[in-house]
Image (tube, rainbow, N blue to C red; front, side):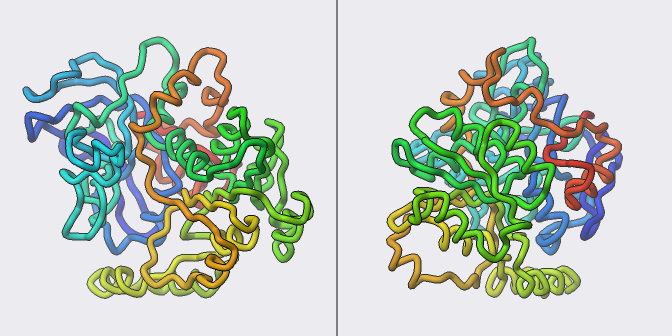
Length: 395
């Protein structure tokens, strides 16, 4: 089959690789019909290459048609249309019983000290072949799927793999009080969708989005969200947002940016230097002394009102990140974070994927590109070029 493979820093290719086969009775094989590039794939493309091997298959936002199931799979059959969540979870361990599927005790990658295995996401999360391919082996398939109806186009459902539940959890974790104000930092796919979800929820009074990419600001503004251009307010963002919220600051902030935030030159230089070191040096360095670009989370701490809540949905991977603990403590800030527990939120989201499409999923993608052109797709997404916000690859 054809698959998108990691080759080196800022280098992916589309190659012939072995077709996946059933390896365990609980496996399924899915023929992929749509598969997305995620913002977190760019971390592998740029920062976390030390944990990748040339030839690793990328991708964790796929959907398709079940081709074959193992003898232990009881709730899927060939021909079923499914979305595949980005995490692999068994559904019957203690953590899954708590709906903490990203902490599944059956698939935890203990040798790396990590949570549940993820598709296409490096040695840190199990080095499981990903879904930017023509076919995908799905372990623990009884739980690791979302069955969706025939009829509507893939765009209606494919974001159930990651974008929708990640944005939903980000807003839920933000704990916006009734009538309160939510600020979303970063208007890439997750931040954009978080503003849509927050707008839809009746108890949230006001939503403000912050970014510096004109096309992303325009997309969110066109749906009626207030926006602040970071390009105009890089030095006084917190003051501007306090002024917009009665001098107090917003009740809640979603950081949808993560480890590669703009405006963190020191950490950016360290990340670039680490990317050029041998993997044997870089891996232990990142696990003990790795730092993130923290401009976004530091902004969130400054922006949020006293007693407010910060929800981190942007991925962070540093182990020695300097945090302003005095400010966090003094402002009595609540902080929630983590990979989205996809299946926990599906029942809340599915009713919003009808033909009225209140979240605008049918037109959410900015680009639909053949799988064969994945290297170009990665390049424009990483450079935020050509208005790229969300890219769907079509095998």
